[in-house]
Image 1: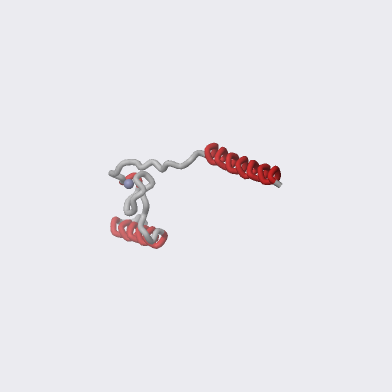
Image 2: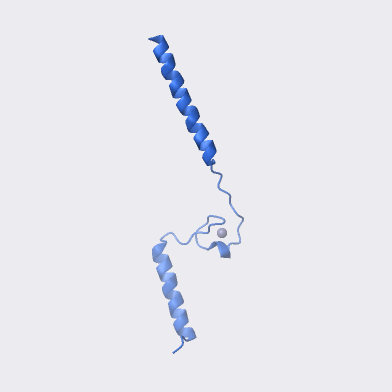
Length: 79
Ligand SMILES: [Zn+2]
């Protein structure tokens, strides 16, 4: 037995319903970060998320630690 067009349509609808249940806000495009369509259907422009790189974060943390250390040393010197 093969699936007729009607059955295929039914399974597509089921898939859509399952997706809607899994993503209450709607599906989200990974390209333009808008809701309601997939990235392969996207007609928008790619949005690039600017995130600090791991090294930048590490350097920042090191700097903060250094500053805290300097403050401690200063405090000890004052005492
Ligand atoms: Zn999009």
